[in-house]
Image (cartoon, rainbow, N blue to C red; front, side, top):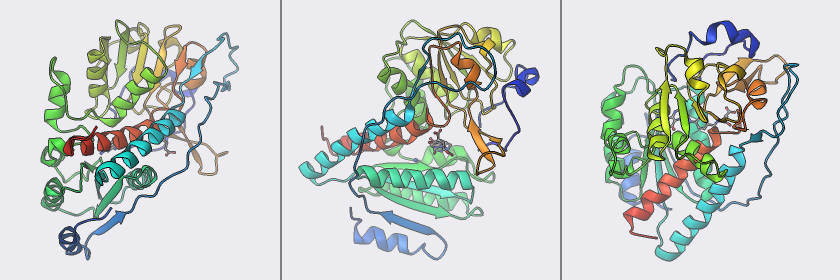
Amino acid sequence: MASMMLSDCASSTATTAARILPFTGRPRTQLGLIKFHKFLDRVNFRLSIPKLPNFTVQSIQACTADTTGITSNETSVKVIDGKAVAKKIREEITAEVSQMRDAIGVVPGLAVILVGDRKDSATYVRNKKKACEDVGIASYEVRLPEESTEQEVLKFISDFNDDPLVHGILVQLPLPSHMNEQNILNAVSIEKDVDGFHPLNIGRLAMRGRDPMFVPCTPKGCIELLHRYGIGIKGKRAVVIGRSNIVGMPAALLLQREDATVSIVHSRTINPEEITRQADIIISAVGQPNMVRGSWIKPGAVIIDVGINPVEDATSPRGYRLVGDVCYEEACKVASAITPVPGGVGPMTIAMLLSNTLTSAKRAHNFG
Ligand SMILES: Nc1nc2c(c(=O)[nH]1)N[C@@H](CN(C=O)c1ccc(C(=O)N[C@@H](CCC(=O)O)C(=O)O)cc1)CN2
Protein backbone atom coordinates (compact mmCIF):
# COMPACT_ATOMS: atom_id res chain seq x y z
CA MET A 1 0.00 0.00 0.00
CA ALA A 2 1.33 3.48 -0.83
CA SER A 3 2.34 5.76 2.04
CA MET A 4 -0.56 7.74 3.45
CA MET A 5 -1.44 11.18 2.12
CA LEU A 6 -3.68 13.97 3.21
CA SER A 7 -5.91 14.37 0.22
CA ASP A 8 -9.29 15.28 -1.13
CA CYS A 9 -10.17 15.83 -4.78
CA ALA A 10 -9.74 19.59 -4.66
CA SER A 11 -6.36 19.61 -2.91
CA SER A 12 -4.82 17.40 -5.57
CA THR A 13 -5.98 19.52 -8.56
CA ALA A 14 -2.86 21.58 -9.25
CA THR A 15 -0.41 18.74 -9.26
CA THR A 16 -2.19 15.77 -10.75
CA ALA A 17 -1.64 16.32 -14.47
CA ALA A 18 2.11 16.35 -13.99
CA ARG A 19 2.16 13.56 -11.44
CA ILE A 20 1.16 10.24 -12.96
CA LEU A 21 3.41 7.88 -11.11
CA PRO A 22 4.01 4.20 -11.86
CA PHE A 23 1.58 1.95 -10.02
CA THR A 24 3.38 0.17 -7.83
CA GLY A 25 -2.74 -15.09 -4.35
CA ARG A 26 -7.50 -32.12 1.72
CA PRO A 27 -4.96 -33.72 2.77
CA ARG A 28 -1.26 -33.62 1.88
CA THR A 29 0.92 -36.61 1.26
CA GLN A 30 2.94 -37.71 4.23
CA LEU A 31 6.12 -37.23 2.21
CA GLY A 32 5.20 -33.63 1.39
CA LEU A 33 4.55 -32.83 5.03
CA ILE A 34 7.85 -34.31 6.16
CA LYS A 35 9.69 -32.24 3.56
CA PHE A 36 8.03 -29.05 4.76
CA HIS A 37 8.51 -29.82 8.44
CA LYS A 38 12.26 -29.54 7.85
CA PHE A 39 11.77 -25.83 7.37
CA LEU A 40 9.55 -25.19 10.34
CA ASP A 41 12.24 -23.74 12.60
CA ARG A 42 12.79 -20.86 10.17
CA VAL A 43 9.54 -20.81 8.28
CA ASN A 44 5.94 -20.46 9.25
CA PHE A 45 4.05 -23.05 7.18
CA ARG A 46 0.31 -23.47 7.48
CA LEU A 47 -2.09 -25.91 5.90
CA SER A 48 -5.62 -24.76 5.76
CA ILE A 49 -8.46 -27.27 5.57
CA PRO A 50 -11.39 -25.90 3.59
CA LYS A 51 -14.88 -25.62 5.00
CA LEU A 52 -18.11 -25.13 3.09
CA PRO A 53 -19.71 -21.69 3.33
CA ASN A 54 -23.17 -20.12 3.52
CA PHE A 55 -23.92 -17.37 1.01
CA THR A 56 -26.51 -14.69 0.57
CA VAL A 57 -26.83 -12.40 -2.44
CA GLN A 58 -26.15 -8.69 -1.91
CA SER A 59 -27.99 -5.92 -3.67
CA ILE A 60 -26.30 -3.30 -5.87
CA GLN A 61 -25.64 -0.06 -4.02
CA ALA A 62 -26.34 3.43 -5.33
CA CYS A 63 -23.86 6.24 -5.96
CA THR A 64 -24.76 8.61 -3.19
CA ALA A 65 -21.50 10.37 -2.36
CA ASP A 66 -21.73 14.15 -2.72
CA THR A 67 -19.31 15.92 -0.46
CA THR A 68 -18.13 18.54 -2.96
CA GLY A 69 -21.07 20.92 -2.88
CA ILE A 70 -21.18 20.78 -6.68
CA THR A 71 -24.76 20.50 -7.86
CA SER A 72 -25.32 17.06 -9.26
CA ASN A 73 -26.76 16.87 -12.76
CA GLU A 74 -26.37 13.16 -13.24
CA THR A 75 -29.49 11.11 -13.31
CA SER A 76 -28.36 7.57 -12.94
CA VAL A 77 -24.73 6.66 -12.51
CA LYS A 78 -24.47 2.96 -11.88
CA VAL A 79 -22.21 1.83 -9.07
CA ILE A 80 -20.42 -1.34 -10.13
CA ASP A 81 -20.52 -3.43 -7.01
CA GLY A 82 -17.39 -5.58 -7.11
CA LYS A 83 -18.07 -6.95 -3.66
CA ALA A 84 -21.44 -8.38 -4.72
CA VAL A 85 -20.10 -9.72 -8.04
CA ALA A 86 -17.11 -11.31 -6.28
CA LYS A 87 -19.48 -12.94 -3.81
CA LYS A 88 -21.56 -14.36 -6.64
CA ILE A 89 -18.43 -15.70 -8.37
CA ARG A 90 -17.29 -17.29 -5.12
CA GLU A 91 -20.66 -19.04 -4.84
CA GLU A 92 -20.24 -20.37 -8.36
CA ILE A 93 -16.72 -21.58 -7.54
CA THR A 94 -17.92 -23.24 -4.33
CA ALA A 95 -20.46 -25.25 -6.31
CA GLU A 96 -17.88 -26.28 -8.92
CA VAL A 97 -15.26 -27.23 -6.32
CA SER A 98 -17.72 -29.43 -4.49
CA GLN A 99 -18.90 -31.01 -7.76
CA MET A 100 -15.29 -31.83 -8.66
CA ARG A 101 -14.50 -33.24 -5.24
CA ASP A 102 -17.63 -35.43 -5.33
CA ALA A 103 -17.03 -36.63 -8.89
CA ILE A 104 -13.28 -37.38 -8.88
CA GLY A 105 -12.14 -36.82 -5.29
CA VAL A 106 -9.83 -33.94 -6.21
CA VAL A 107 -9.59 -30.76 -4.13
CA PRO A 108 -7.95 -27.77 -5.88
CA GLY A 109 -4.88 -26.52 -4.01
CA LEU A 110 -3.27 -23.07 -3.89
CA ALA A 111 0.23 -22.41 -2.51
CA VAL A 112 1.00 -18.88 -1.34
CA ILE A 113 4.51 -17.66 -0.58
CA LEU A 114 4.92 -14.52 1.50
CA VAL A 115 8.36 -13.06 2.09
CA GLY A 116 8.93 -10.32 4.67
CA ASP A 117 6.68 -8.51 7.11
CA ARG A 118 4.72 -5.96 5.10
CA LYS A 119 1.41 -5.57 6.89
CA ASP A 120 -0.63 -5.03 3.73
CA SER A 121 0.85 -8.13 2.06
CA ALA A 122 0.15 -10.19 5.21
CA THR A 123 -3.47 -9.00 5.12
CA TYR A 124 -3.88 -9.90 1.45
CA VAL A 125 -2.41 -13.36 2.07
CA ARG A 126 -4.70 -13.87 5.07
CA ASN A 127 -7.68 -12.86 2.95
CA LYS A 128 -6.64 -15.24 0.18
CA LYS A 129 -6.35 -18.12 2.64
CA LYS A 130 -9.78 -17.32 4.11
CA ALA A 131 -11.29 -17.08 0.62
CA CYS A 132 -9.83 -20.52 -0.24
CA GLU A 133 -11.32 -22.00 2.93
CA ASP A 134 -14.72 -20.49 2.15
CA VAL A 135 -14.95 -22.03 -1.33
CA GLY A 136 -13.38 -25.38 -0.44
CA ILE A 137 -9.92 -24.87 -2.00
CA ALA A 138 -6.97 -26.18 0.04
CA SER A 139 -4.32 -23.55 0.75
CA TYR A 140 -0.67 -23.99 1.61
CA GLU A 141 1.08 -21.00 3.05
CA VAL A 142 4.81 -20.41 3.34
CA ARG A 143 6.01 -17.38 5.28
CA LEU A 144 9.65 -16.49 4.97
CA PRO A 145 11.54 -13.81 6.88
CA GLU A 146 12.54 -10.59 5.10
CA GLU A 147 16.21 -11.60 5.02
CA SER A 148 15.57 -14.93 3.23
CA THR A 149 17.56 -15.61 0.10
CA GLU A 150 16.24 -15.88 -3.42
CA GLN A 151 17.47 -19.51 -3.41
CA GLU A 152 15.18 -20.33 -0.49
CA VAL A 153 12.17 -18.91 -2.29
CA LEU A 154 13.15 -20.75 -5.47
CA LYS A 155 13.38 -24.03 -3.55
CA PHE A 156 9.81 -23.68 -2.29
CA ILE A 157 8.58 -22.82 -5.77
CA SER A 158 10.36 -25.87 -7.17
CA ASP A 159 8.78 -28.12 -4.51
CA PHE A 160 5.33 -26.70 -5.23
CA ASN A 161 5.89 -27.10 -8.98
CA ASP A 162 6.42 -30.84 -8.34
CA ASP A 163 3.58 -31.27 -5.88
CA PRO A 164 0.49 -32.79 -7.52
CA LEU A 165 -1.76 -31.49 -4.73
CA VAL A 166 -0.85 -27.90 -5.63
CA HIS A 167 -2.60 -26.51 -8.73
CA GLY A 168 -1.74 -22.86 -8.26
CA ILE A 169 1.34 -21.06 -6.93
CA LEU A 170 1.59 -17.40 -6.10
CA VAL A 171 4.36 -15.30 -4.66
CA GLN A 172 2.91 -12.26 -2.94
CA LEU A 173 4.30 -9.00 -4.36
CA PRO A 174 6.15 -6.82 -3.75
CA LEU A 175 9.18 -8.90 -2.79
CA PRO A 176 11.98 -7.52 -0.59
CA SER A 177 14.26 -5.30 -2.66
CA HIS A 178 17.26 -7.66 -2.49
CA MET A 179 15.34 -10.27 -4.49
CA ASN A 180 15.13 -10.45 -8.24
CA GLU A 181 11.41 -10.54 -8.96
CA GLN A 182 11.94 -11.75 -12.52
CA ASN A 183 13.98 -14.80 -11.45
CA ILE A 184 11.30 -15.73 -8.97
CA LEU A 185 8.30 -15.27 -11.25
CA ASN A 186 10.11 -17.14 -14.04
CA ALA A 187 10.49 -20.16 -11.73
CA VAL A 188 6.74 -20.76 -11.33
CA SER A 189 5.56 -23.49 -13.69
CA ILE A 190 3.30 -21.86 -16.32
CA GLU A 191 0.70 -24.59 -15.66
CA LYS A 192 0.45 -23.37 -12.04
CA ASP A 193 0.98 -19.65 -12.64
CA VAL A 194 -2.45 -18.59 -11.32
CA ASP A 195 -1.25 -14.98 -10.98
CA GLY A 196 -0.53 -14.98 -14.72
CA PHE A 197 2.76 -13.12 -14.18
CA HIS A 198 5.09 -15.60 -15.93
CA PRO A 199 6.60 -13.95 -19.03
CA LEU A 200 5.27 -16.77 -21.22
CA ASN A 201 1.74 -16.17 -20.01
CA ILE A 202 2.09 -12.40 -20.50
CA GLY A 203 3.67 -12.95 -23.93
CA ARG A 204 0.81 -15.18 -25.02
CA LEU A 205 -1.67 -12.60 -23.74
CA ALA A 206 -0.04 -10.06 -26.04
CA MET A 207 -0.14 -12.24 -29.17
CA ARG A 208 -3.02 -12.65 -31.55
CA GLY A 209 -3.97 -16.29 -32.01
CA ARG A 210 -2.27 -17.35 -28.77
CA ASP A 211 -3.85 -17.90 -25.36
CA PRO A 212 -2.22 -17.61 -21.94
CA MET A 213 -2.72 -20.41 -19.44
CA PHE A 214 -3.82 -17.72 -16.94
CA VAL A 215 -4.63 -14.01 -17.00
CA PRO A 216 -3.48 -11.73 -14.12
CA CYS A 217 -6.22 -11.51 -11.51
CA THR A 218 -6.82 -7.77 -11.13
CA PRO A 219 -7.10 -6.96 -14.86
CA LYS A 220 -9.19 -10.12 -15.36
CA GLY A 221 -11.47 -8.87 -12.57
CA CYS A 222 -11.86 -5.50 -14.32
CA ILE A 223 -12.99 -7.15 -17.56
CA GLU A 224 -15.26 -9.58 -15.67
CA LEU A 225 -17.00 -6.61 -14.04
CA LEU A 226 -17.63 -5.03 -17.44
CA HIS A 227 -19.00 -8.33 -18.76
CA ARG A 228 -21.23 -8.99 -15.79
CA TYR A 229 -22.68 -5.47 -16.00
CA GLY A 230 -23.37 -5.93 -19.72
CA ILE A 231 -20.98 -3.10 -20.67
CA GLY A 232 -19.83 -3.53 -24.26
CA ILE A 233 -16.09 -3.31 -24.98
CA LYS A 234 -15.85 -4.08 -28.71
CA GLY A 235 -15.12 -0.96 -30.77
CA LYS A 236 -15.00 1.28 -27.69
CA ARG A 237 -12.20 3.71 -26.97
CA ALA A 238 -10.45 2.63 -23.80
CA VAL A 239 -7.77 4.44 -21.84
CA VAL A 240 -5.65 2.60 -19.29
CA ILE A 241 -3.88 4.91 -16.86
CA GLY A 242 -0.68 3.28 -15.60
CA ARG A 243 1.52 0.65 -17.22
CA SER A 244 2.55 -1.67 -14.38
CA ASN A 245 3.29 -5.32 -15.14
CA ILE A 246 0.59 -6.53 -12.78
CA VAL A 247 -2.32 -4.26 -13.75
CA GLY A 248 -1.93 -1.52 -16.38
CA MET A 249 -0.11 -3.42 -19.09
CA PRO A 250 -2.17 -6.66 -18.91
CA ALA A 251 -5.39 -4.61 -18.63
CA ALA A 252 -4.51 -2.85 -21.88
CA LEU A 253 -3.74 -6.20 -23.56
CA LEU A 254 -7.03 -7.67 -22.37
CA LEU A 255 -9.05 -4.69 -23.61
CA GLN A 256 -7.31 -5.03 -26.96
CA ARG A 257 -8.20 -8.73 -27.10
CA GLU A 258 -11.81 -7.63 -26.55
CA ASP A 259 -11.53 -5.39 -29.63
CA ALA A 260 -11.37 -2.04 -27.87
CA THR A 261 -9.15 0.72 -29.26
CA VAL A 262 -6.68 1.18 -26.46
CA SER A 263 -4.44 4.03 -25.33
CA ILE A 264 -2.10 3.88 -22.37
CA VAL A 265 -1.55 7.01 -20.34
CA HIS A 266 1.59 6.99 -18.19
CA SER A 267 4.11 9.15 -16.36
CA ARG A 268 5.57 10.57 -19.59
CA THR A 269 2.28 11.17 -21.39
CA ILE A 270 1.76 14.75 -22.53
CA ASN A 271 -1.67 16.04 -21.61
CA PRO A 272 -3.09 12.88 -20.06
CA GLU A 273 -6.34 14.71 -19.31
CA GLU A 274 -7.11 15.31 -22.97
CA ILE A 275 -6.41 11.69 -23.94
CA THR A 276 -8.41 10.31 -21.02
CA ARG A 277 -11.36 12.54 -21.92
CA GLN A 278 -11.75 10.66 -25.21
CA ALA A 279 -12.33 7.33 -23.50
CA ASP A 280 -15.58 5.39 -23.32
CA ILE A 281 -13.91 3.11 -20.76
CA ILE A 282 -11.23 4.23 -18.29
CA ILE A 283 -9.19 1.78 -16.22
CA SER A 284 -7.00 3.64 -13.77
CA ALA A 285 -4.17 1.91 -11.91
CA VAL A 286 -1.60 4.47 -10.82
CA GLY A 287 -1.89 4.63 -7.03
CA GLN A 288 -2.46 8.41 -6.86
CA PRO A 289 -5.43 9.43 -4.72
CA ASN A 290 -8.15 11.34 -6.61
CA MET A 291 -5.87 12.05 -9.56
CA VAL A 292 -8.53 11.65 -12.25
CA ARG A 293 -10.88 14.59 -11.92
CA GLY A 294 -14.39 15.08 -13.30
CA SER A 295 -12.91 17.20 -16.11
CA TRP A 296 -10.88 14.18 -17.36
CA ILE A 297 -14.04 12.17 -17.99
CA LYS A 298 -16.24 12.08 -21.08
CA PRO A 299 -19.94 12.22 -20.15
CA GLY A 300 -21.28 8.68 -20.00
CA ALA A 301 -17.87 7.01 -19.72
CA VAL A 302 -17.43 3.84 -17.64
CA ILE A 303 -14.79 4.01 -14.92
CA ILE A 304 -12.92 1.10 -13.41
CA ASP A 305 -10.82 2.41 -10.56
CA VAL A 306 -8.05 0.02 -9.49
CA GLY A 307 -6.29 2.45 -7.13
CA ILE A 308 -6.43 1.68 -3.41
CA ASN A 309 -4.91 4.71 -1.71
CA PRO A 310 -4.95 5.41 2.02
CA VAL A 311 -5.63 9.06 2.89
CA GLU A 312 -5.67 10.58 6.37
CA ASP A 313 -9.11 10.75 7.92
CA ALA A 314 -9.39 11.74 11.55
CA THR A 315 -13.08 10.74 11.58
CA SER A 316 -12.28 7.13 10.71
CA PRO A 317 -11.43 4.73 13.56
CA ARG A 318 -8.31 3.64 11.63
CA GLY A 319 -7.19 7.27 11.16
CA TYR A 320 -7.35 6.82 7.41
CA ARG A 321 -9.72 5.80 4.68
CA LEU A 322 -9.20 4.31 1.25
CA VAL A 323 -9.83 6.26 -1.93
CA GLY A 324 -9.27 5.42 -5.57
CA ASP A 325 -7.26 7.12 -8.32
CA VAL A 326 -10.48 8.76 -9.48
CA CYS A 327 -12.26 11.56 -7.65
CA TYR A 328 -15.41 9.60 -6.93
CA GLU A 329 -17.77 12.47 -6.13
CA GLU A 330 -16.92 14.30 -9.33
CA ALA A 331 -16.85 11.17 -11.48
CA CYS A 332 -20.33 10.20 -10.27
CA LYS A 333 -21.68 13.36 -11.87
CA VAL A 334 -20.20 12.62 -15.30
CA ALA A 335 -19.77 8.87 -15.72
CA SER A 336 -22.47 6.33 -16.56
CA ALA A 337 -20.92 3.65 -14.33
CA ILE A 338 -18.12 3.53 -11.77
CA THR A 339 -16.43 1.13 -9.37
CA PRO A 340 -16.16 2.37 -5.76
CA VAL A 341 -13.06 2.09 -3.59
CA PRO A 342 -13.17 0.02 -1.51
CA GLY A 343 -15.63 -2.58 -2.77
CA GLY A 344 -14.98 -2.33 -6.51
CA VAL A 345 -12.06 -4.05 -8.20
CA GLY A 346 -10.29 -5.16 -4.99
CA PRO A 347 -12.62 -8.05 -4.10
CA MET A 348 -12.52 -9.22 -7.72
CA THR A 349 -8.75 -9.83 -7.50
CA ILE A 350 -9.22 -12.64 -4.99
CA ALA A 351 -12.30 -14.03 -6.77
CA MET A 352 -10.27 -14.30 -9.99
CA LEU A 353 -7.43 -16.01 -8.12
CA LEU A 354 -9.88 -18.66 -6.91
CA SER A 355 -11.26 -18.99 -10.42
CA ASN A 356 -7.75 -19.44 -11.90
CA THR A 357 -6.93 -22.07 -9.26
CA LEU A 358 -10.09 -24.02 -10.03
CA THR A 359 -9.37 -23.80 -13.77
CA SER A 360 -5.87 -25.12 -13.15
CA ALA A 361 -7.13 -28.10 -11.14
CA LYS A 362 -9.75 -28.90 -13.77
CA ARG A 363 -7.11 -28.75 -16.50
CA ALA A 364 -4.69 -30.95 -14.55
CA HIS A 365 -7.35 -33.60 -14.03
CA ASN A 366 -9.12 -33.21 -17.37
CA PHE A 367 -12.35 -32.41 -15.56
CA GLY A 368 -15.27 -30.42 -16.94
N1 LIG B 1 1.15 -12.02 -6.23
C1 LIG B 1 0.35 -10.92 -6.21
N2 LIG B 1 0.71 -9.84 -5.50
C2 LIG B 1 -0.10 -8.75 -5.50
C3 LIG B 1 -1.33 -8.75 -6.21
C4 LIG B 1 -1.66 -9.91 -6.97
O1 LIG B 1 -2.71 -9.98 -7.66
N3 LIG B 1 -0.80 -10.97 -6.93
N4 LIG B 1 -2.22 -7.68 -6.11
C5 LIG B 1 -2.01 -6.67 -5.09
C6 LIG B 1 -2.61 -6.95 -3.74
N5 LIG B 1 -3.81 -7.80 -3.68
C7 LIG B 1 -3.66 -9.13 -3.81
O2 LIG B 1 -2.63 -9.70 -3.69
C8 LIG B 1 -5.09 -7.26 -3.31
C9 LIG B 1 -5.29 -5.92 -3.12
C10 LIG B 1 -6.53 -5.43 -2.68
C11 LIG B 1 -7.60 -6.26 -2.45
C12 LIG B 1 -8.91 -5.78 -1.93
O3 LIG B 1 -9.84 -6.56 -1.83
N6 LIG B 1 -9.04 -4.49 -1.54
C13 LIG B 1 -10.21 -3.98 -0.89
C14 LIG B 1 -9.82 -3.03 0.23
C15 LIG B 1 -9.08 -3.75 1.32
C16 LIG B 1 -8.86 -2.89 2.56
O4 LIG B 1 -9.83 -2.48 3.18
O5 LIG B 1 -7.69 -2.68 2.90
C17 LIG B 1 -11.10 -3.20 -1.87
O6 LIG B 1 -10.56 -2.60 -2.80
O7 LIG B 1 -12.31 -3.22 -1.66
C18 LIG B 1 -7.40 -7.62 -2.66
C19 LIG B 1 -6.17 -8.11 -3.10
C20 LIG B 1 -0.51 -6.43 -4.88
N7 LIG B 1 0.22 -7.66 -4.76
